[in-house]
Image (cartoon, rainbow, N blue to C red; front, side, top):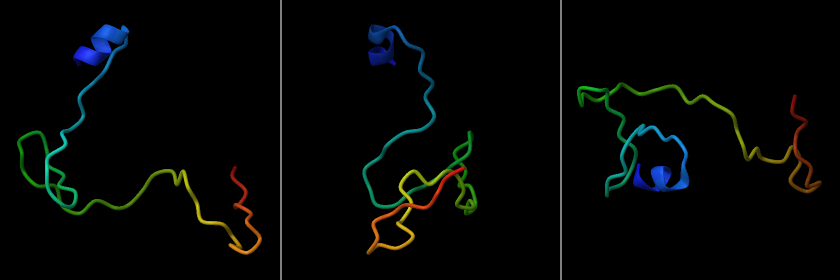
Length: 59
């Protein structure tokens, strides 16, 4: 929050980073959230043909 204020931009805290392996998702009350489906945009897709070095077309 301090860095955002110094930079003059808005920031919203959406989580915390703790030491330890893995990812733990909890709700606003601190209760564990069941496994979430993997969803979202793949920013680094694997090449269609690694030998060709080409990436799949995006829409």
